[in-house]
Length: 511
Ligand code: HXC
Image (cartoon, rainbow, N blue to C red; front, side, top):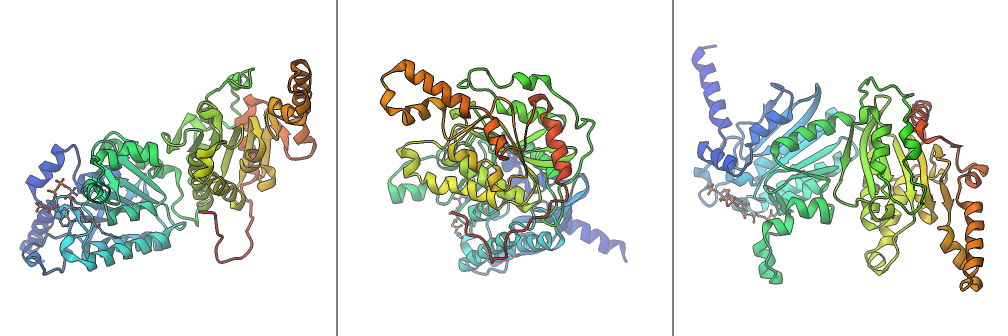
């Protein structure tokens, strides 16, 4: 082969790598954003990226588009590795037609989505785009639908992750919405179905991009995204970290990363984690941190539904999903946000063979009109349903309160919890002793001494784990300092668990 041909190829590649040109890349940098290719470089192991379809161009000839063709057409696609394991990527190039989506652009994305599903590896999308390519009309809408279809077919087959790193509007929001996790970058990204101009026209409401769909909205208020980071570099580094916790597909067990943290490590400080006063809060994250390998865990939606903690960690080298009530926020009550957040996390774990470790300290479901009008019944049922249908190993530890319906929901024995432990101070009851006494002994309501007596009796009868243990609902009462060891041994015991739900087309979770 002549040197000239090879040089020509390199020259063409080099030109393509410049996307929309130096000026537009500089504009991108000036906004605090990296370019599409710089992002991929940071996301993947060094030198591992193989780009596909870099010479693809759009086929539109309306509005003078035949004069404007840029190889790659606004999206960089291909595959590479993270910590040596394959992942498929697409990264929207805002410097080319604002990253907007043409039919050819969509075909490139569909190609990596299909390869990911076929070859059993995660797919990661980096978004920074202006939505449908306006010049292409219905072809662009068709392209979006093709991507949505692949999202749905790949759901539960391979992990799908979206990172919003710039504008993301119109058609661009629904593909991320169907992936397993969405993350945003603070101040440089926003996400909405319709932008501020349309909002103003339709509702007369004046709102900024940030107020309508910034990271603070979606990571804190709407719960649409599972986390927000300060800049592109932090976001991409954290996605690399998240990937290390996940299996490549539903057909694999989670990866094992050997650690120096022995499973029989005890932690005496856990014996005093729960305060003597049952109404005093404590930080459940301390338990998660002290139980998992080397205290290393990745929290999902840390700023939304703070009354429940969802996190990936490792025990005995292998990934587990922690779900834990957080007494520090709203006393760890289950409300709409917490139920939705945890239900989706439990389902993700079940899809991808990740055992679930549940820490329970829950006073019940949140009462009140706000919750009832918002549909707490349906949302709470999501979590109940998710736990009940999950067939992965489920280990539960009740650290303090397990009251009412929330006791049932939080991975109880009755929902096929495999191993259910309680700490010695656990209170398993229909409700708190005071409230219970006031209902049962209504006639004595105005007699404080009598009420104190009734409350004490109820406490003695139910505010302990022994009644539940005597019925076999709790498998053992364990010492807090031994919690890591007991969970780790249980997970070893459950390694080959094989449970299948009855044959059906699919279930009908209360959406
Ligand atoms: C074609 C587009 C484009 C689009 C941006 N560009 N969006 N080209 N189709 N949708 C081009 C611009 O013309 C410009 O080209 C370049 O990208 C950069 O855009 P700017 O506007 O200069 O950038 P900025 O000021 O940062 O604003 C970014 C933006 C804005 C907020 C995203 O561009 C914008 O509002 N775009 C339109 C968004 C939109 O309404 N999309 C359609 C949504 S409807 P030059 O050559 O000047 O660099 C939809 C329906 C699908 O998506 C539904 C499927 C279910």
